[in-house]
Image 1: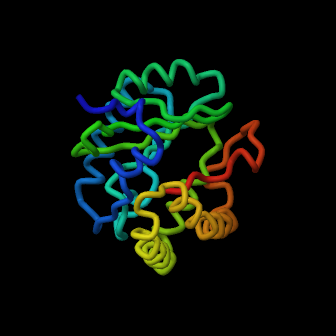
Image 2: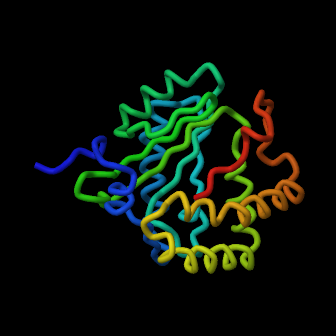
Length: 200
């Protein structure tokens, strides 16, 4: 009998779940829409967004659908129960953030894989980055080229892959906020440090 995921080292997990990129897939949007309906049925008063490269729709990406769920600060436990009831596993907990995944098995990735980011309302820099790449095709292609360049180098090092993209993401996010103004802003107790975007 093989090891459970919870018993594996980080290095073992990275080898079972390597970085892998593929051309844009039409089913990414369908996967998100189905998951949106599932989550919205349990969290009707929350904002739910498709984020990450699969939301861009025009660039190579990891075949993992990223979802952002915004809640009020006192709603974490209620949201946590609803999300785990939908089949998600909590992978990381911080004071104002929780991260979940779905579709990770001891045999590798399932057919559909999701990452869900639970945040307090207003902690949503990923939306600015997403919109910037959608509205600036040149930047989207630059991001795609960067990811393709990093892919094999960091195939079994997800943290290294993430860190190597962070400068580009932060630069585009800053430009997006200047261009889009208060598109997604909302009152929040979070500081700018807490609102740094997750790389995707």
